[in-house]
Length: 448
Image 1 (tube, rainbow, N blue to C red):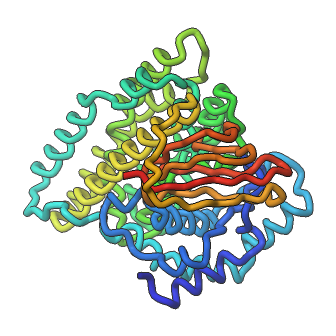
Image 2 (image 1 turned 45 degrees about the horizontal axis):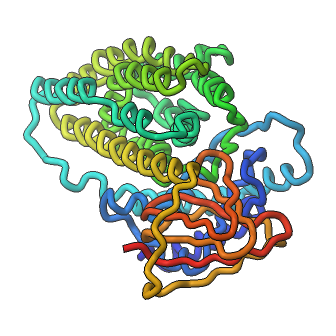
């Protein structure tokens, strides 16, 4: 359990107007960041123990808070006029009191989220040649591995929605790509600083808005029918998606983790070219004659070949030459932590795609046994505010009365009618609310 002091600070922080529930499926206000967790869930907030904890309501809570407070150091200017509601959220989000609360929460929440990551990573007596060979072999293994998403896209019926879900899974980081990296650019780190800046400049299009990587990602989103406002689909981000974005803020804003960042950065840059080659091929196969803007992925296929060499030849090797064997384990830890985290996120995304495909296809699970204990829920149609949920255990939902809007992380919703049953696996994100003016009654049962 987090300390009582930290839990109370979280409650005070989340009380601000800008953290209220939303009444919309999409957010067009970059300063409205819902943190409408229940009192009981906040009281039970605790540190993650392993990767199995990542797809839990508790991990979602911790990462949602962490993502929110990290982004208080970023400039978000909306693609619209600032109306009075947005102005009020802007003032609340960046109020000095809120910034102070966020800074106080950052360290304990980072410890709670990332404290387990190094568990099980072997401590070795490295030599520089041994480490470099290990990293290169690991990258080669990643390059040779089949892309699980390719086979999944062949299996699912709703391929466009699966691709949209992939884009939303990455939007927590890619819509502000390079932002976390700014935390590692300050101070004085000599030639390493200059080489890092070269990578950063590529992320920001070398000053060209059209070539900025986040701009290219917005083009990919728009070509799939998605809005491109900053964090428009914030409420569809999976826990692992938020955690991936938070991880780079964590290691970039902590100078102590600089050498771990080099290791994590090498994994990210070195594996992207081959990964995106396989990914774009999978997208083209899935979409057939339908077009998608792939400029973002094609840019990375090219530029990350250069970044791979910069990180290895101009950052990792010079750092080892300058600072000796004492940093070798740190580089390895960063590489291995991010590799494991990326694998966890890929599995989380695959699970959400399968769940979404079942719901979008109207797949009805078997009727549960009458002997199972059931809970009855009533959702009032007059209350339009709602909040994402992560299934703590596998659930069986049956709509008994009313019409229900049900979202599965694809940026929209399907409408469920009375008699519809939905099986929700453990760890899956969903949102639901009654249609305007209708009360809904649901029966909820645990799934064995």
